[in-house]
Image 1 (cartoon, helix red, strand yellow):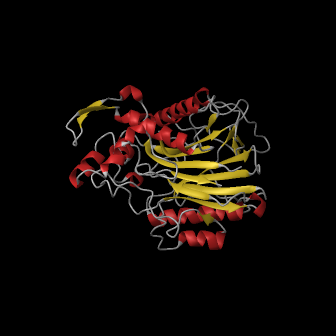
Image 2 (cartoon, rainbow, N blue to C red; image 1 turned 135 degrees about the vertical axis):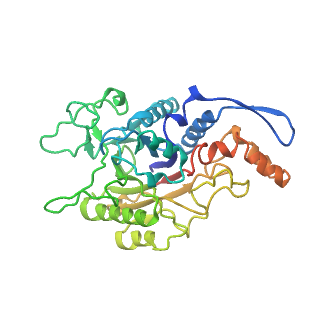
Length: 407
């Protein structure tokens, strides 16, 4: 039995992506017929698109990158509209399947600097309102997996600065604050890890690559069936500047090969938004990961024909809506041959055209007919609110496509 992972950088994810209370329907005209058409509000489209990706791919783990949070201590719990969004999404996933759980997301750094938000109007607005940081939300199916840390939530007085800690002598795990108390199965006080240290005589914290950079979010699971492997998953959102992103990736690889001890029946997965383009990897960083660190890159310029980034709607056309840039990836390393259950599968979920997982939904059936229209009308229909603008960059769902991994 395999484990399936869906990982998606949902641009500036907060409750604003899925808040029905602020939604509006809109009356538009179809160019081909001139008929008026009432389409469901844009927020409903985003919500449906997110949930449909989950239903269609049927993952055991769903990772949401770029959850926006109010500022606070690294390792403390996500706050503000990011917390509302993560918890609301959990409620909606549980309507699909009541086994969904959420590892309480932690802040990946104290503050994201303005340079991380260049060109992103929504994030710049958040910064002007007092700054922000980010978290990563990791959802999982409790009927398929057990969440086992590697950190724990301490049984100490709650405060905004309270953080997850490494288990050990003198550490007593305890319940999460009320708002997050229903995220995990009863009695599970494990937590993800956002602090990484060297194994020197005097351990030092590792930066990725700077103190203000977002840390990986490490979560560990055991499979309940099949090979019953341990899965250690480092979800990442590296800096947007390519040189810094490459440095952060190498630091992550070094941590897991020099400081972290794998067991034979374990798979280590580094997954997320690398901000390193596998279609233009001038420094051969993914080749280095394989040769020097024994990590298998799931997407490379030799095995993937598309990118993972949508064009802004100002530049997108029916035939050209995905950039060649492939910034999202997964690296795999096995503790032993016995942990290798199947040849890993990696897919970029292109939900405009038919993907390996099928079409999006009835709502987007107009895509199938666009190709029969005259050229000018093709792009006009494609850019109508009920089509591409609901999927692509803000104010749509995301500038990233989701990636699907099965191993």
